[in-house]
Length: 123
Image (cartoon, rainbow, N blue to C red; front, top):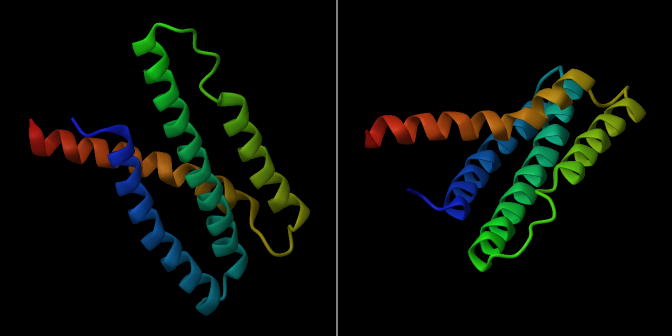
């Protein structure tokens, strides 16, 4: 099975292409607010995935060493999502709220699809 860091790096590369498409959509379509929301949400989503990977690695080390694990960073990831939504609300004329929330979920959706594809290839 692929390591967590390898999976994250693959998803991060894919997210760069998606973000590039969002930037092109932001610059060349009549819906810049929607694409701005997708960009902001996706950036915060990548940050949330990075936090999750980092905390899971700490968790793995702690279990291996037999020490106690404090948390998996749920509060920090939740606060990051709140910050993304707060930005969308604060700059409502420039950032679409619903697309920001959708952008937050894109990395998790990609993770799900990537794992399904990996499972189909190897089983």
